Image (tube, rainbow, N blue to C red; front, side, top):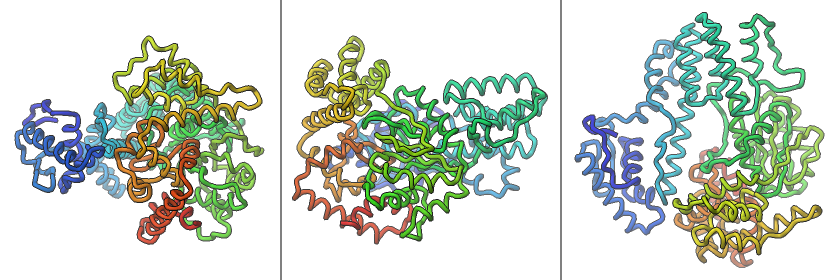
Length: 619
């Protein structure tokens, strides 16, 4: 941030920076003061939040020297783009303009796109962390995701246009630019190799291929696809391979896709460890049509599946799609209800409600996609029928998570265990520092290790226990868990671990205030997730209590503005509701979602709330 070419450094706080970034990234529009106050101080009373906003705006005025770009009125704040240059705004406008052009016009404006892309230097607002500002954090996450997608899409298209023109130096530069942002982007490696070959740089091309192999092996645990190998085979004088699959049946990705289609939730918490498992599962997904991640509840199956899905985004022409099956009952209608859930995730409108599975299978007949089917535990009886329809097309691949095997012929199983000691320790310390930033794990490794052992290395148990550091010492947490943990034997490990997690849930429950307990119990009524509006209306909760439940790992944030409970947490929480309270809650839930059904016109929103609306309709 500069004013008159001088860097601005006298911000009062991180929230001052955040406020200016929010205003500048969305210029030429009025932002109500009430909205800005909630954005950064949603955990405070309205009067206190507005007071804080007034103080921060005063600070911004002082820091910016009452710059005319910042227009502050009694009721609203506006950032005028005409008085300032905002790199994010200019970048988005340039990319959007270019993508909307016909190919002929794009060809003569490649220099402008290259200039715009030079402004994208990585993650949006990297390094800026604002405490107790859930709405700002979600906006920051959404912007970060959108900007990255735009940059990748533009860089892919830029390389395509340079290749069509035969502009090899420009193609090499664009490929290197993309690799600087995403080193494992194989299509960019391939383009760079081709550009070097075209310029007569054979040795450099071979060196680039070796670099590509090393990065793919280190990051993903895979070999280059046949498309890349074929280029090098020709370069070395060998016979090129053009088959779509190897003799082992390994699937090879097709040409790079300019538009990446998916509905994967952005993960705000880092995935600790699991590097070998990600590589193994990613390779299996390329080879087999059905891969099942098998493990106890809370072991991290869903998180691992999402990590693999992220790695596979460029491998499937028709996208990678996440579908939760957690709220589908094991009844005769389970196959059709599962089909409806999949169709909703894909945005495919089913017209034959008597045979949705058959209609979905027909829709998938010519598709090349990966479906992440999460929480298949209760639907094993429907697995054979579902797979018979979904896997009829060899282009459809399934990655399932389950606590039990699906017992389908095509199934390849990966058994997931708790985290090993070193990774468990890292996870505990990292999550503890989210609650208490000054938490120090040094010198407490043995005690933390005992905590992790008590929950069998299960990430969910570790995260919940780590959230207790706000109230107890590591030694006290370990002592409490030693009383909770149930020692398993070979016959009933699942039961013992489930009982241990129940004990962890119960202890976390005791640390909540009565309003927070009430909110958690009420959140268990939702199916397939919920947003803040539903929290306020149905659960009658507030943002402050929701933020605390998220911080304590009892509520999961699955995308910007959308949340869910882990199935085991949901099972525990819903048992805390009285029969009378459950009836009242069901009534509010039904009224809210049936009203939403009749007032919302956006089909995408209806798809997102599909399970909630189905639940409301059936009551």
